Image 1 (cartoon, rainbow, N blue to C red):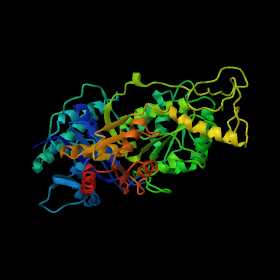
Image 2 (image 1 turned 180 degrees about the vertical axis):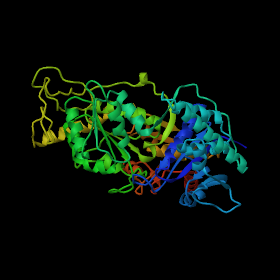
Image 3 (image 1 turned 90 degrees about the vertical axis):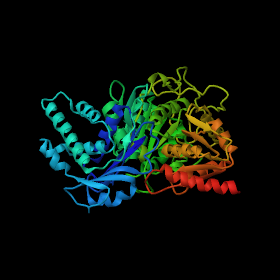
Image 4 (image 1 turned 60 degrees about the vertical axis):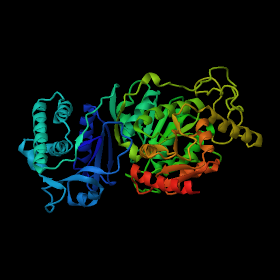
Length: 571
């Protein structure tokens, strides 16, 4: 039976190579011309505990992690017991016969991967044994797996050829076990290779690359899941003349350090999660008040408090939109795919420079470590913006009133021309503290008027005159889009409105939402945060919520939206 896509899940204990197996299969499939997406979930401990990692392989771009699992590799009994229910009809389990046994008669077969790997002379090749078995079940080319192995292990070392030989042999032996089992889940259709160059990258790496492409100079961060890999990436890659990356001892130190860097004229960024946003509240208020460019990446996880450090949620929106006391509304970009992470990060750096203030980029766990093959970004499309720096005579008044009708006043840099005071108190035209009401009125208006400078974010509007509109944000975009396309195929009168920018919302998006009779917002939080904010602006929005720490499945969204649509149609 020909199939357009397959989902393969590896489940067991953290540290058993689950992520490595899914990533290897994804990269082999990508090289063969397929589209792939990986997804992992694991507990917040260094090693051990129930974990899983999966890959979806498709002949067309992958929008979500899918509804069910075609092949389950269960490395222990607990993994089988807790993941078996996710198998689709006719799905097959490969279980670890060295760890446990299952009674005869089910859609499963055992494999002794460790024993087989040792027979090849490389005990570390057990994951290649299971990959060979999986490849046989979906009729995936073993030659493509061979090509991946040769590329992966050809590192210029003396024993490379022996490692390659043992891994290829392990793949063949695993495929033989699967062939003898008599099981098959179908045949993956031949790929149609895209006519553009691709890269395999995670969401956090894409954010890092995007920021760097926009000229990022300075990065400091505190390690916190799921943002830590951005810090590690920057330490390895933000190098060279006038570049700086450093690990600090707290999120408070992070925000204050990038405020100092922004004050000194650098393009500065940090990344954190919800607990860090809470600690950065006062610093973000200072950056807003003093008008200092900087970017904070919030890779959301389950909360509040320590919450679910390695699970996904979209529950920081209230905290990010209004992080400080007083009248503050921070610009927010929330990319909905790994590819959008790249362009949104570049735009976040540009926005900070353009309007001279703080910008928050919101991602989440489900996107941070998710791998996708995306079109290789075209750096020629990245417009690198830098703040307008004052270079005139002393006595310059940076904090003049500004209503958007003329050019934003330049920013003096310490050591250069012009008076500069980085002042968190309300101030007059040159930055000196004042409590006169007239200054607080005009500068509050100035700070909010500057948001009008922020445009250029990607958005999508389709069938906006439909009876019902789906309008997701962040990484809920992928499964929502897949659900939307299924509903269109079933002839539902349904539309689509999506924006990477949540503040300020593009005018075209706002007007389309405003005239809609019913806007459905799929989001991973209990309170329906985005729909709540939309309703404050008079938009008829309601949320479809999920808050168990996992992303939406397209099928569950189709069911929810169908029920709501039927109710709306009856009314």
